[in-house]
Every structure is written in C-alpha cells, then in structure tokens.
Image (tube, rainbow, N blue to C red):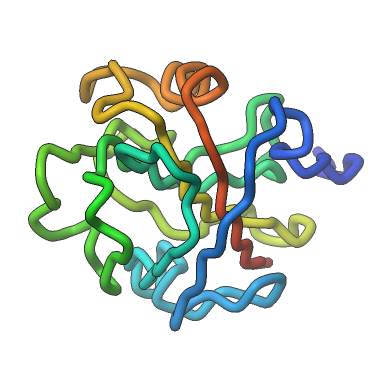
Amino acid sequence: MSLERPVSPDPYTLLPAAASFTVTSTDVTDGQPLKDDQVAALGNTSPQLSWSGAPEGTKSYVVTCFDPDAPTPSGFWHWVLVDLPASVTSLDTGAAAGELPGSSFHVRNDGGTQGFMGAAPPQGDQVHRYYFVVHAVGEESLGVDADASPAVVSFHLAFKTLGRAILHGTYRH
C-alpha cells in the first residue's frame, strides 16, 4: 500500500477569517523540523509557547496542535487544551503533562489520551506539518467539556474565535 497523496492545504485558510496575533516558542521554529522532544517516540513533550497581541475582548484561549498531513481525511489532532484564562500568555515546555492553569482542561487527542501527543507520522511518509495554534476566544468558557472531541472543539472555535496565532513545525520519520 502506498501513502502517496496530494499535500493537504493549510487548514486555517479554510476557516472563517480572524485577527492574527503573535505566538513564539523556544522549542518550535516556524516552518522548521521539530526538536526530538516534540516527537512521540523521542520525548513526547509539549513545546514552550508564548503569545502576545491578542484581540481586545479576549476572555480565554484554546491551544491546539493539528497535523493536516496524516493519512486520514480528517488529519490528526495532537493537542487540544481548552479554557485557558486570558491572564495566561505562555506555557512552559512540558506544561501539558503538569497542573493546568485555572479551569483549563484537555480533550482527548486523536491518539486517545488527554494531553499532548508528539509527532508520529508513518515511517517513510511525506513531511508532516504540525500547526500549533493559540485561539483567542471571546468567552471565558468555550462551552465544551473534557468528553468533547477535537472536532467539536474546532466547531465551537469557528464561531467564538476572535483571533489566531499560528506557528508550525515539521517532521518526517
């Protein structure tokens, strides 16, 4: 069986327009290969992220990591952290495995766990892109619970996002 297929589009260009703001990382360089720490088999550690310039009216954040290049029609969600308080503007390396701020929580990633799952593309597959996105939300709560799927979170974000800060790394096994 061959995994040859077209490159998936940038998924965030397909969503309703939203203001942009800035996200930076000491662990992820935009458009460059991920460090071993962010690879499932080599560290499986969520990256450090810092953001600034969120739109006025931001009351909470959702942080996600999505791989549109997974060999599925729906991509692969590696991380979905919901309801971060608006006062939080950074996450330390490994924050997904520790105590979360305020009333924030994880929903299950597509690997079936709550938390961060590092890059794990099929061996020999094309280069995969991992979009780390901080979504500024105009409500204190997105209105989902920990049993929601990443797709349901994404659906709510389509209507409640004020802005997005996007950073992406790559990985090929």
